[in-house]
Amino acid sequence: MSETIAFKPESLAQVHKIMARYPEGRQKSALLPVLHIAQKEFGGWLDVPVMDYVAELLSIKPIEVYEVATFYTMFNMKPVGKYVLEVCRTGPCMVCGSEKILDHIRTKLNIKDGETTEDGMFTLKPAECLGACGYAPMLQLGKFFHENLTIEKVDEILDLCREGQIALD
Image (spheres, helix red, strand yellow):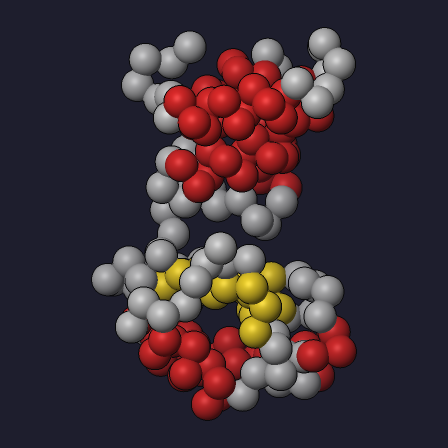
């Protein structure tokens, strides 16, 4: 195992518990939940050494981890802010004003898509369908959805984040 990267004992125990759900030789099936644990434990993103560590734990090739991690938008391939604002930009949300919401966030936070504010507080991440079409426009913040967005609601969400009053999990 890697000398510089290692899960905390409680996280490693959780990884082994997840791996035990699958038959011998099928550890790759544990990849998604293990990547979630890794991202949470190692700073909110998946650096190459972290992905290599996950590959080693699961006895799979590093490329197998890279393929999965880069495919899913829920995994971050570079450092992100404390709050990742994932704004849906597909059909229903666009029709209901998500581009206006995105433009407002870009301007208010002085960042572009995929960027993080200088203070490390916010990252803006346009997303594909998040499955809340009936409540458009919407954004995901941590594991929570914020729906029927307006400029005022977005400003309130940003203020609550700055005050530390928004939970991520």
